[in-house]
Length: 398
Image 1: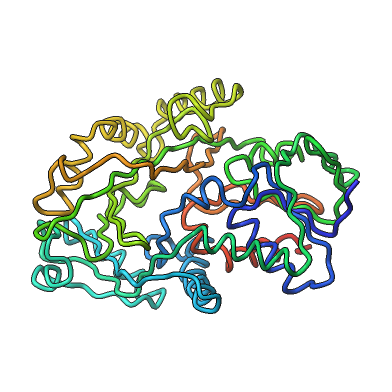
Image 2: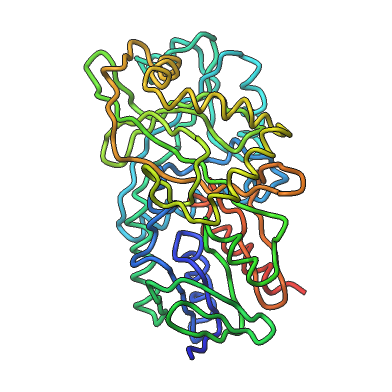
C-alpha cells in the first residue's frame, strides 16, 4: 500500500496545478498523483486551444469571474519564467448588434482588462479581412496564446524533480472514504487528503465517495477546420463573435495558434463518449445509456435553449454550414479555404440531473478530507494556478 499526505486523481492542468501549489507550500509533504493514462494531459488539457482568456465573458460573482483574469496573468508569467512559448495575438469581438457589446465592455472595465471599442476603420486596420455588419467591435490587445503541452510537461517535470510522484496507467476502481483508502487497477493508496481532479471522469470518481450523485457529464465534441490563408484572406489574431452568455460555449471563432496556423471552430455537438474523438471509439457501456437518457431529458426540458444549440450544432456536421458561419467572421472565405484536420477535443460538461441545467461555473464539493472538482471546463486552463488555491483553501476550510 502506498501512503501519502496528498493524493491527487488526474494529471490534467487542474490536478498538476494543485500539486504544484501544495508542493510549493508543503515541500516536505508526500504528494502523489494517480493518472489513468500513460502521460499527462492526454484529453481536455492537452487538446486545449491555447488561448489565455481575459475573463470578459464571466460574471464577477462566479468562480470563473474571480479567477480567470488573474489566472491568465499568472500563466503568462509562468511561461516567461520557464522560457515556454507564448505569442501576443490580440482578440477582436464582433457582433450583429451594437447593444451586445455593452455588457462585455462593462465587464472589461470591472476586471481592468485593456479593451477598446473600435469602429469599422479601426477594425480593418487590425483585421483587414474581418467581416462585420455593425459599426462597433471590441478589441482586446493583451490576449496571448500558449502551448498547453509544454506547460503541462514543465509542471510535471518540476513536480517530479522536487520529489512528487505520478503513477501512470492507474485507473481508480474503488474508494473507502471511511478509512481514507483508494484502489486502482494495480495498487492501493492511503491518504491524509484526497483531491479529485479527474476531468471528464470527475463525476464518476466523486460518486465512489458518495459525492455529487445529482450530477452527470454530457460530453460535447469540438472539431476545428484549418484555414488555408491567402494574401487577400487571412487573420492577424483571434476573431470571436459575441457568445450566447446563457450557454457555456463561445461559438465558432478563429484561432491563431502558437505555431501560426489559423483554425475555425470549435463545434460543440453532444456525443456518446467522454473520449469519443472519432467514430464509435471512446464510448463506455455506461455512457451508452446514461448520456442519451439525460441528453434527451435536457432537450425536452430545454433549459438554456440547449435544444436550439444542439439543432445548430447538428447543422455544423456539414462543412457547408461551417463555411456559412465562418463568413460572418471573415470576408471572402469559401469551403475550399477550409480543410479537415485532426484538431479536436471533448468538453466534459456537467449537468444537474434534477434541474436538467448545464452547470455554468466551476463546481467544487468537499466531503470530510476529500474535495472534488466536478466542473472544470473552460477557462480552466487559463485559470488553473489561481483556481488551484481556491480548491486547496476549500479543502482546509472548517
